[in-house]
Image (cartoon, rainbow, N blue to C red; front, side, top):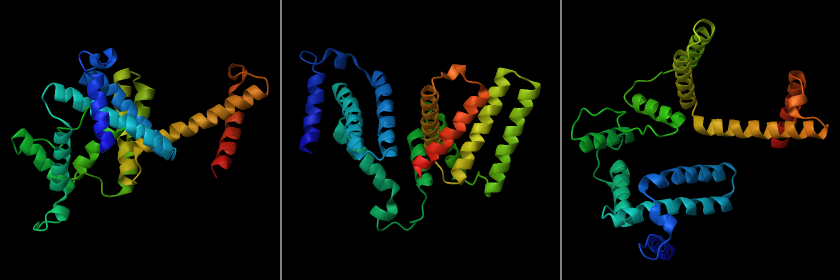
Length: 263
């Protein structure tokens, strides 16, 4: 706790109207958001790479974001770090009655049902939508999964994986029809959106995080493409000078080499 208090004091000093840092004094809640998002991705990257030394550093950067928001809130008499801690403590205990309330009869009360009750109480009505508070600014693969999980919590879901795969194939066929018959951008975007949504649904049913899977897919492509670049340069060529057939040969070699390296 000593260093946490030290961090709070450092941030307070950085935001001091007279002696603080000019850049830090210019920041607002909104201006800090992009940095927060960036830090979350850097935490995820460190975990993905199993780099726990880097993870400690990145978690420190993420903690700084929390302290930053807290200091700005204190300046406006909104809340402080103690208020934040109290809020999350209350929420965790409320959502785990089977752990913290030994008098709780309904030990199987679902997490989603408790959250829906909280949403209704916050809105002051029992008719609040299950999907009302899903942030539109979330990465859309994650948002799609969250939407689907909310709907599934009340039984609106496919029961068999075969049905989900069939839906993916159906959406792919609809996209092909638009590509072949009506190449309007709006229609293409709509059908591609339906296909991506159904693929996220498939990932949920097979217990694969779509965001993580795509991140790993991106990483694998980069590794293979960089090997391809290296081999082409080694032969005294440039990518632009290679035919599509040559690029395919180099690509297949890159796949073979990088697969053996990963084994």
